Length: 367
Length: 239
Image (cartoon, chains in turn cyan, blue):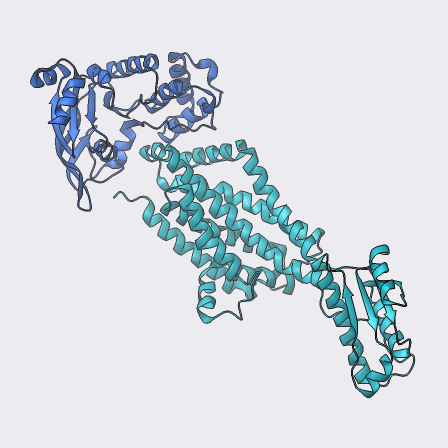
């Protein structure tokens, strides 16, 4: 035990003296979650727009009311000609202009259709496409109501109900994904890379020639990084709760237990990679190809698993990330309890046991 | 008393025989030079004798223990230092020595005393808390040697300990080796410097996995009819 403590002590010194890496390990998760949180929450409010109403009938007025009361748009101009629209783009910095055709109400009534023209400022493609989606949703709503009942004055409800909420959804999606990636990067990648570095510099040989057990060398390497990844995870959760208002509907203790179990699974991958890789490049490639990519692609974090071909769905089952992400969402969002997610915990523990057994089987053998 | 006895020690990697039935013995306190061209099998032999590799056949008794069955015991009784400088650069001198001393099971208080003793012997006491990265290579090598014998091993394996070090430090290094040998530590050293070979009590020359020559430097020179070990080596390799 004294030996293990000594190895741990040495690893802590390595980590504390490598200030840049330490900073990156602690800062990257915060940056990632802020970045994902703020950039993906592309909800735009009060975008300036202009409406060229050629119809000026009650239906066009209804549509305009709907648009301006949605909260997403602020109608700053009512141009009377197309060249005025151009001017408004330049002078008023409008993001979008809508042209309502003449006889809007008439064509809706007689031909059951009307053409709305939307002019976007596509200098920012993302903003344009988001605003376009808002308009489409409002128009869709408008048409639904039109078909639903009569169009008498005052009977139209102009409260717009957007069915999607990009902000909330993206944070719910990304937080579990970021936790997964950070755990893997810090626990598996960092520990296996630093172990491989010792193999490259020759210090590993020095350690192995001493009576210290190789298991201690590897375990001593992995434990400090497990601690670091747990700190990062807690920071991510704190930020997502306090900055992005992500709920924790389940118990915090269960959430922590889940994260700790996944940390062990990630660490066991780290041990496995450490046992088989001889150089830092090896460790990096194995982690990237064998763990990081499958986690990004096959965990359901970026791409939905349901639409994938069977073979990829089976592959996804083999990697721990999918199970962790399902479980953490259940706990945080659905408020699931231990008995709802014990299956996933079991899978993660089983994976860790198998990997640890495999890597330890490799470790202390002389060939 | 014999520190190392190798009996038909053999290591094969697939079809390739890295070490082929070598036999030799090293006396306690002897400085035994282990020479040979690159790839002759020296490193493989050292790895086997230090308990890192299992021999394919044959055996060696190191410090009284068989490398086949007692590698754990062997590890307690040997020290090792390699051609590649191998202390931790981001640890201080003291921290490095503390790490290696502790994994050999030296009690903390005793260890502290030993570290200070060996640093004062190297006249480096005032640098105990400097980072290893900040000291010159020659000093690092001396330090690595001091660390390798901190736990007072019976045998220390030195794998090209002086490569890349200037002649003055090399001479100082050999003084340390002589001191250690005089205190009863058996030195098993590989080197490419033939002048260093002359300093050894006995030397052996390996080629293609086999031990071709073994004897004192003067015996070998006489045997080959030349004046220096350098000539012995060249003549031998050309043969």
